[in-house]
Image 1 (cartoon, rainbow, N blue to C red):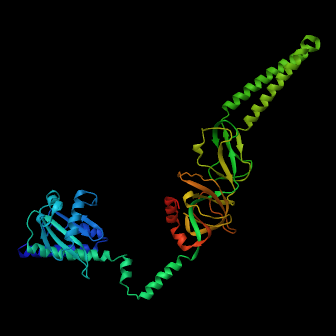
Image 2 (image 1 turned 120 degrees about the horizontal axis):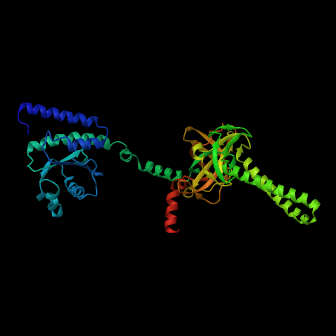
Image 3 (image 1 turned 60 degrees about the horizontal axis):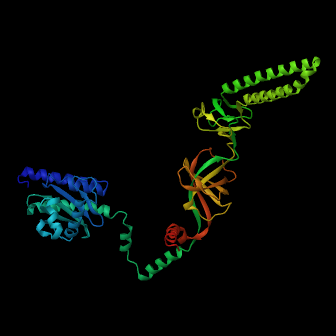
Length: 443
């Protein structure tokens, strides 16, 4: 203990500082950290802990987050259940416990413990403040520990009273008739009709968009438009690599020239020599075949440039994702959409599906503007779920925006609420638990 005058002044200063830190603490966890780690200048000890009623071992010196499954915390918890019955400060040794708790003491803590109950203003027991050390505890130590416990108990009581609505309700004195009336009112409220609704992720997508697909099996060479760029009908979108197409066209052209020359020679010779008349028809057929191949290769070469079939904005990811990429016939490359014709695409998880009909009201809360929801009506609902990008099976729904709403930008995402039929408030609140119980029990 501090014996001289300067030591008393220093101890008092430390006590005042600890009191101020507890008053300024932002949480009960911060008070617990101060209580178990910041007292060694006043009381020498090796280990310290805080046990709070209803929360168990709350703070332990040297451990930022106590693991409740560890053997030390479990042993300390059992001891605190016994020590929490103490009404005043006292010291304990292993002899004060019985059985396994006494035998395990030396394994987990020094042999001398000082116990201080944490009392609230109304005398309630909030918990226990414990200090362990090798030396015996004296009366003046316990007196100082009592002052520290009062400081920490005051801090814990402030946070213990916050948000504890049930305790506040229990303190309200109501007559039996009023209590019965409140219970009946709560039961009656469960039968109040409300609109069944469910939420699902949604996205703004183009309506009746035109999909531009690859007409060839080749490699894309150049892109002439940028994502979300406005285009007009006939504007060049992208073009394919002409190397193979040009080579095939050249081969077909030479083959046609050879076949045409053979036919011409056979026709001229047949005029003077009847033996060559039989060669005219086959060579003419071969020339026509090569002409068809030449026309087809020219057609493919002309299709190396893909142009917009109609006006709108082009929707695709990045130019760099497509340049140099080999594509197949029919593969989607981009989409041309009218920015003024959009709709909601909703992916409703199977677990959240409710009974709703087409033309049901829908409200979309965009992530970019949640304060201004967009109203709409359900237009399409798939009968068969499909795997979404998240891997969850979901129904594909589409909804039209209400008339007069300015179309939002294509690609915006948010959460859509779909409204179904009227149900009771009780069913609305307990639908999921009821479904889980019935599936579990097969009822």
